[in-house]
Image 1 (cartoon, helix red, strand yellow):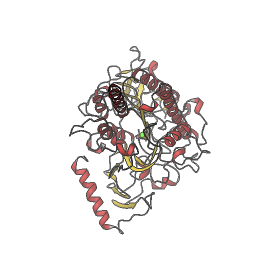
Image 2: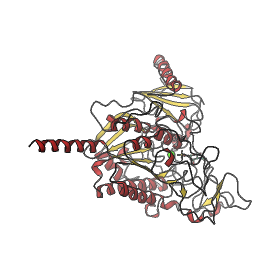
Image 3: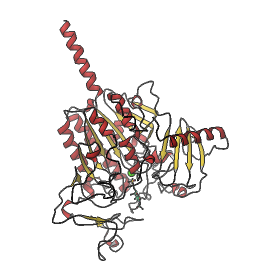
Image 4: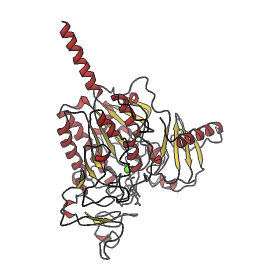
Length: 513
Ligand code: NG6
Ligand code: CA
């Protein structure tokens, strides 16, 4: 009897330990806005997202889930480092030639997970640079340092973002299928006077450009930057989503005996928005809607695979986005024309590039069957918080000088009753103009040192906000005014001063925790 009780206790301890070390899959969408999914208010007549809606229904849907910046590179930087990107160097949108912008000696989220016994991988869009400082990516050699030097055991990447050159996969530190007889050259200057570009061969394009994006043409689409060679290595834009799913399943299959961490970095719905042919016209919103349907399919495939492998109850999935929505981001893909009554940013103003709520308040869902109770949470959580949250959960103590702004919001992510969420959050744009949003409870401070907004066109209505003059400081009550239209600075001067001082302190302190 004693032995039985003892082994039962051991068994339940082991079970507890198992439950405590879930596999973690972070699915990060690209440029997906708060209102872009069925579960966040998108109408079925515009597009349907049944798989992500199911995560939200059976998991926890956050109404105050954020990414830390309103462009890609700074959000990904702070997601992996746990430190606000504005504290780092060169953390704005990375050009094709960018070296790895996370210094090699940085203690990162995957480092922490490896310390806790996890296998780690990133599959999908990288956009954090490759190669050493001063040198950048050596496309025909080893692309080092890269993800492997900052904590990932495995990576299968789109190295930049797909409107930038080159259109090749990188597996670990090599361009996949590169023929040494046809070396890959990537640069910012036209390689020869007769090199075809989006300007000289505009009439041959399968999708026209609207601004920028008119250099080298590949697959009928002109890009930012130039390249030649590497023909055997080049992919078709239409196949990216399938590839991410294939490689993710393959890697999960090989690593299912360990706890694992997979960063599934989808390229959808970034431009150029080119769905696989089977997803074309599956929404009423042309390409922008079709790639959301494709993203939804990817999520469904991952969940299905976890079920098949019996991993569903041991895996926490977090679904999030890297910044808010944008309509026309450089290609004539009918995004604005077909937006109709769809509200890509939900009730919020702004979108990608802006410090309004629409720039960073994005879909955020946690899903862990059997552990996370289904529901809706209004707690403030952010993509910067994974390191702090998972570290505490797994019993890892973060080094003092690492993950400086990553807070432990694990109780909120798990939907625990007394969870508090973040007490405050700084929202940044791409980082050039010294503009910040600062949220504390229902209050939102906008600091626009540039004194004008950075909003690009999310929809026709918002185009009037682009480059609009604004005061340096403005104060809003998000509980009554989610769209940040009614500046309360004059009504609450004391609150305004307090918020200004608090934001400045967090900026000056160089850390939150
Ligand atoms: C901008 C690009 C935009 C997009 C963005 C990065 C132009 C005119 N605009 O500079 O198309 O690529 O960078 O987007 O080139 S992000 O989601 O990766 O941050
Ligand atoms: Ca993005």
